[in-house]
Length: 201
Image 1 (cartoon, rainbow, N blue to C red):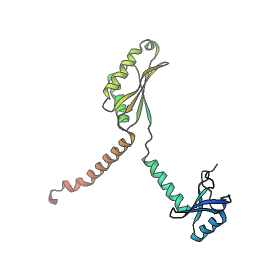
Image 2: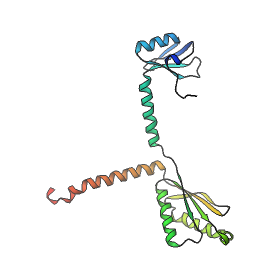
Image 3: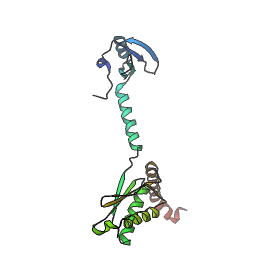
Image 4: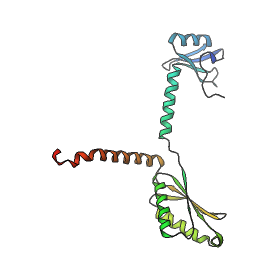
């Protein structure tokens, strides 16, 4: 079924509750009269509430309305933050350098406002030592506690142990901060040559 409202001759009811171009209530009128008024005003008759009895129709410039709606939807999508779950896999016996690298990624994800699913992968005999994975997850959670919190406690899932970290910062805040930082860097780059010239003072 089309989500588009019915307009003009596509409206097939004997009468409609009509709303004028400025939002004023005209009242219940026969469809023919409503279409006549639309022509008079050089506007479209648009069904805005199809389930009402009788359906509510409004006189408007449908092309302009569609364009404005599309622009609003685009703006809303731009400002909408999609929470992404990033995944980071570790081994229980990870070496310190690898741990620091992986922790760096987790820090970056949390700073961007994303959730992070940490998976500890056990192999062979390691499966009989789940406490190694648990300790590693706790250590990681403590190392990044300024940026995130444990949203889902460590739990065993077959050969893996999984924990989810959530960011303290909302995705929208992280995006806004990133944009501000970018603008500041750009301003700094543009302002540097002027500052570097001593004869300018």
